[in-house]
Amino acid sequence: MEYLAHAGINNFMKGMATVNPYFDDLQCQPEVVIPPQNEDCTDIGEHMNDPVQQTSKSNVTVSSSVRELLECPVCLNAMYPPIHQCSNGHTLCSSCKPRVHNRCPTCRHELGNIRCLALEKVAASLELPCKYQSFGCIGIIPYYSKLKHESQCSFRPYNCPYAGSECTVIGDIPYLVAHLKDDHKVDMHVGSTFNHRYVKSNPHEVENATWMLTVFSCFGQYFCLHFEAFQLGVAPVYIAFLRFMGDDETAKNFSYSLEVGGNGRKLIWQGVPRSIRDSHRKVRDSFDGLIIQRNMSLFFSGGDRKELKLRVTGRIWKEQ
Ligand SMILES: [Zn+2]
Ligand SMILES: [Zn+2]
Ligand SMILES: [Zn+2]
Ligand SMILES: [Zn+2]
Image (cartoon, protein in one colour):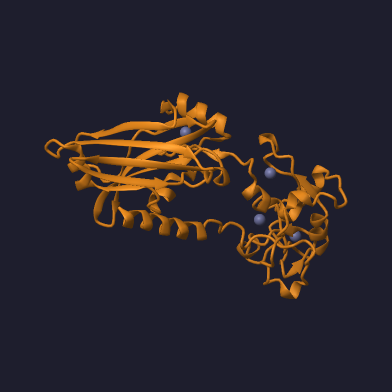
């Protein structure tokens, strides 16, 4: 069992190292405006300070027309340096520029390599509310930090943690709990200990399967217990793991254990629930849970090994 636990943790660490590939190549610092000759260097370091703290700068009243000016006419996304323009002054974002074959999409004139520094500077002076304002974020964010803030905003909604189907519902935790209950009909369970039996009549037929999610409410929080069948290399295995309905920081305050056994043998897993910010697939693929070989599972199930009847017991606790 030791080796399983270590494999899980190593993979978990690897997962952590690659967790935030997000905005490496996206934005520039507003103060650093590079001349057009150097426009290859678009990925200069971004704001390292917490953008929400920096609200003291001149507060430009943002009329919607200024925001429209900063919208790329092709992809309709907000533009970030380098912002390009044609000789007639029509603007274009840097990801659309290579796609328009050197023709201005507005007037069809040759596009050339003209940078729109004025607009870049106007953008640098803007401060806008976070797009998750309606979820409770009160941050007013400098234009060039906005994407980065929003990618990490603690008020950003969560994806539905249900694993059985591709569900696109997003929302805050209370909303998702109600959604899991009403729309996915998941088992809701109050308390921090559990004893579940996972049953499957033809276990040899399934390579990949997910069982009904169970949601636990304890310590004023919600946790999702997942149980899935998948292939680990060539070996058919089952994995059970817990995810926390909340952010990663809070998830780390909790631990859980899972225990499965039969016929005098027992496997025990102790772990830290992963935030539902990490998809169930990501957690599964990092093996951050109790992994049971199918043969062992059938042995635990007793009987003639034709049926899976796996009893998983567990406990969630709060770390001091
Ligand atoms: Zn564009
Ligand atoms: Zn033009
Ligand atoms: Zn925010
Ligand atoms: Zn859902």
